Image (cartoon, rainbow, N blue to C red; front, side, top):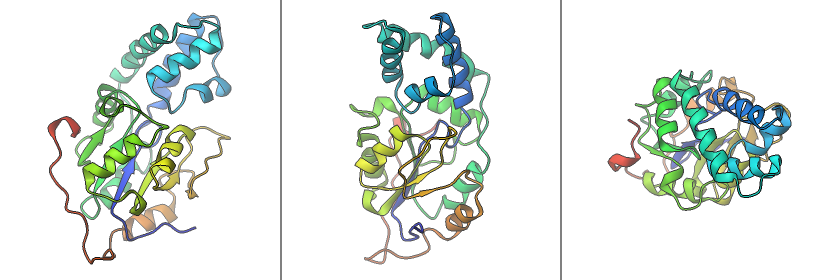
Length: 240
């Protein structure tokens, strides 16, 4: 299918979609698995990618055969990821150009399952922190992805109808969230061999068909001939 041009808003995931933080997470996860006598590869990555720290902790506790240790493992993963992110992370190819192409013509936001401190560090080190009207993180909702709450909150903040908005996702967890919110979904898988049930799939944000769409999106008037007004976001929802 082709992506619609007549839209209310576009909402992006962060980790593995805009910023190459998955390498940071993978190094941290490899260390944590090794601490518990396990190797870490693609199959192990699949059980933790896209979820919150709490969900990853619970998944690791189950994998390690240590029921009840989820919170402890989540805290250890937080410590290790923070160390990795402090060294910096790069924007993924095409991320900045895509966002800049949409910015100013459509309301845009980030909706991430990561803690706010991680999201802000990642966007800042990648040089993307000044581009989004709203940045939502795991703390901003009661139910993180795969529940629809983060994407619904992002659409509310942007004054957008989810059915007239697009989400960009790299994981099954995030895609399930956007689907549940009733949004169009673009999938850009960050793991090899992972099949995403998205409306359309691109292998990278640099795909010419995607950049061509971004250059034209938002150029058509909506049914009422206007778009939702972009309001200045609350301070706690802005990228710093």
